[in-house]
Length: 203
Image 1 (cartoon, rainbow, N blue to C red):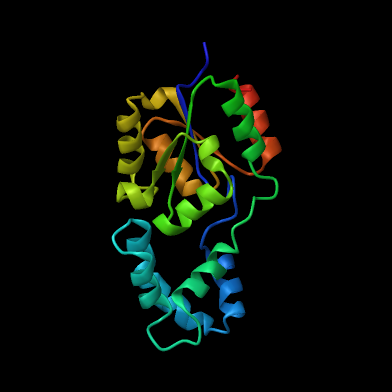
Image 2: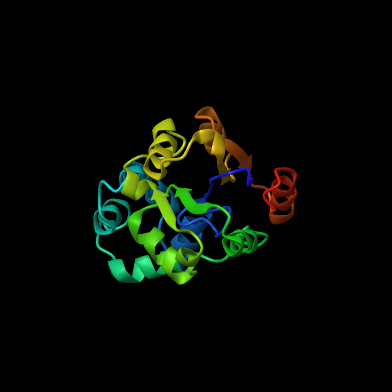
């Protein structure tokens, strides 16, 4: 018997680079010649509401970037943001594809991300071909490591926590999954994850 009914993956830091973390922001700040400290200050106030789906991309950008006149447009800035997304070096995409090909359990995403960057990344990198469910903060109105996001995802799937596996690169998010009874693995690289999955008889 396969050990899990569902495996949920984080996206940024496990499959892809992060969507809009400090490294991505620093690169775009340099590209558009912005004041880094000012952007970080304004970003901090608007980012979590954007990730929870409470405000739109334009509302986030107005708060974080366009609080004063700029020589570039919202679209140009968002394109600069999207250009930062890449396949993660030593990421878990090959393992995800292998699991999807085996078709032995449900595969999905459980991630914190704003709607616009999430949908761009899912489409750009073809992740919907492998992840059949996306429990993303922008749809759920909750962010990891809030225990309710894990419980709500499992409730929607109708699966028991002890029959569910969660993979994330951030320790606090792994702890959040474990706290609700999921088997949770901290992702540190593809080889280490493969060893962990082999030990669990997933691969």
